[in-house]
Image 1 (cartoon, protein in one colour):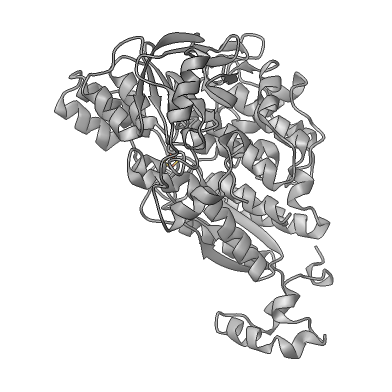
Image 2: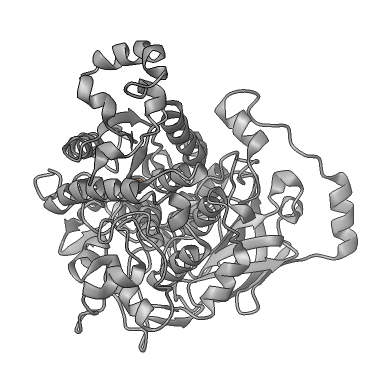
Length: 572
Ligand code: FES
């Protein structure tokens, strides 16, 4: 590549050699010399490396090493890396607490950080690293927003924990809490699960939100083939060889994109989003993918809405047998050919658009030429001819009196598509969890957890603690949970989330009372409150919008800015 013949935008920062701005930019160069720039470096492209590092969580604890490795690879390619940090809120640790309200908030905050750093330094290229859930869509949102040149590199998922011959993930401990509270587990067994669930660095191992979104970005074409299933670390907790190779390949790919002038929105097209939605439905991904793909599409200027999920679901069977509802973790997908192998299956059946451009500079179809076929004799990924569950059996979009703007249900091939029963209403997650753990929830009931939406929470917390507690208590198939909040990728059971409009906006969910009959019918894609219109009218007249929970700070700002979950809950 003739790097020096290209005109770099970062010349605005450092001054163009011999140009009229060379003298004016001397102060910037003086400061850059203090951070190891030499004369020749001012001719090189500047590449921002977004690094959501923290030692607070295994999901991202290796990201500083990853960022430093990527930076070295950028130097080898002839660029100058600007490595910078972003926040990370780890759902697995903040779950069930007030702190979880910052989780979805952090997605947009990280995208804002990426935009601010990249644009303020007028950088030429961007490699956005990611690990824990929100950092992944945030990386793509940061790239898409200003149509930057760059790509995403996922830190990779954790190795599975092992206990008594079984694979464990972080969700094992959430479910153990339910079992322990229901008196079904000894103290020792409980402690053993806690100690074995997370053996080293990397994002949660099942097909929860992190792996779903990392895979979705690979399918979108904004990260390299195989990079989402390559594991984070080896058994010694050092960066895996595959992940080290991802660092080198990502730097090489970035310079190809710079040379060809391929920008994020050349890759993040409407067809590419259809591919990503198709993959998520086929693999059995998290419901959070609905929220995040809508948000990334919005940043990319692509029209994607809930109806696209319904439309594509009609064509796509469930073939992934992954946790939380299935048997396997990301490592198992890695062993049988990773995301490209599944993409090839879908592409050969005409379910994936092969003409979409990717960060390799090639199209999806070109990337898949060398990809191996689905290995026989395994049940990690079922064939499309004999799937794990039929078409439209994973995520469905529901509408009805309770959710005129939409809600999301994850069926995950469970076969449970209907539930009708009396409501038990809670105005926040904590009180619902307390009731479950105290054994106060009865079979057949519909648990309503409201005022947990994007504005009302604020921050649309995930209801993993109550949903896992229901599973652990053996009520997973008997009790439905409905919320204007959302669900973790680790959730399974009868779960309806993202109910829009949310309670704080006066949605009907705000008017439900204990004992009201709720009818979920995923076959007819409806979710309704069976209360007479006259009674609803009375309740509506008596309803008062609650005061904002946070008068100042990030959550107050977020509650003022955020939009509906049915549109991705975005702030820009
Ligand atoms: Fe970080 Fe699951 S809590 S990836």
